[in-house]
Image (cartoon, rainbow, N blue to C red; front, side, top):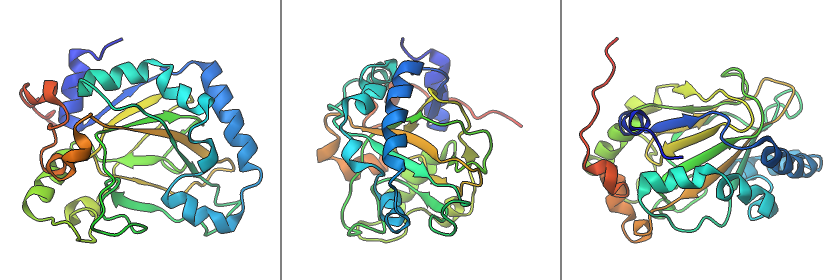
Length: 254
């Protein structure tokens, strides 16, 4: 199932497309069961490090986790946007733990772009990619549920900043005008899928519910991305040849 013209226009304008109910319940259940079992042994002291990288790292390449991407139309949609993709061999599992269960252990994540000036990396190191595909594995009903927050259209601002003000080695992750915005919370039910341009800045809030908020993320790259990471930060459509040739949709008037 390809993206519609309206979805492609929305992706070019906002950097985000959400497909509801894309992943079948059986696939969601198998992946969620694995993570739920792993979560039972979670130690509070491990949460800060997992929050920076991935929870359940030993599950990242499990077939039932990879199936959320590889055995669904998410992979086809990613290829439709990028034209071609490198194989996806691992997933990032992100859990926002309940404040009531782990008070003060997992603060909010500030606005950032993945793989650039990360606190746990050398600021000269880039671990970028082209497209983030996120699969919702637990219901998110409100912004207080540990939701991902993203800034529609922020990929244009970030590309301009990377092109005109940022330099490799800087520790700032986003410009001030991005850092001060809260963004739009990603709300949804298990099986919903987010396709988000790598340059869309995002953050994650505290989880004020009694239950963990779980997402599986897949970092998808155009085959040429690894050798042109800097250029892709400055040109948002370098990895999207089909979209680069289309005009920019006008923003909705308020």
